[in-house]
Structure formats: C-alpha cells, structure tokens
Image (tube, rainbow, N blue to C red):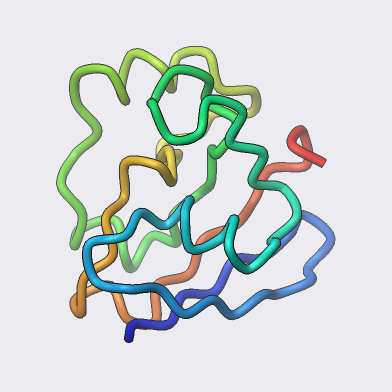
Length: 106
C-alpha cells in the first residue's frame, strides 16, 4: 500500500498509508490527520480538503479540471500547486507523495 506524507502548516508530518483506488482525502480522514476537514465528504463541493502538492509530484498528477478546478477558485490560500485531496486517487505511482496543508484549515 502506498504511503503519503501530509505536513501541517506548523511542520508536523503525518505518514498515511492508503489503499489503491482510495482518495487521498479518505486516507487522511481514516488516519485522523488534522487540517483535512472534508465537509462535503468527498463530493468535490467545499474545498476543505485543499492541500499543496510538492512540486516534484505535480507532474505525476493529471491537471485539475472541471469541478475540481472550479472549486479551487474558492480555496483559501490557493497556490499553483493547490489540489483537492478528494480528487487525488491513490496509486502505486504516488507512493511517497508529499502534501502540505494550509494554515486556513486548522
């Protein structure tokens, strides 16, 4: 199972193991990672699972499109590397991925 690292705005790191096909948001919620609020439960309608994908991992992900791109417009502290974790699906290719969580979600 792939392991991801989610880093709080204060530098606290959480290693999360996720199942193939599961969203990053689901894995983070099951591991009780603070800063992933996921108010909509993964329906891509709230942007409270917003995270910053480390640059080295951005090229491995498909671009944010459609509803995700629209919802990112509402994300607080949005950056070029912002993604919604409910839309990032875990695969073996993402083993080791690092995401940082914005201070606005704490």
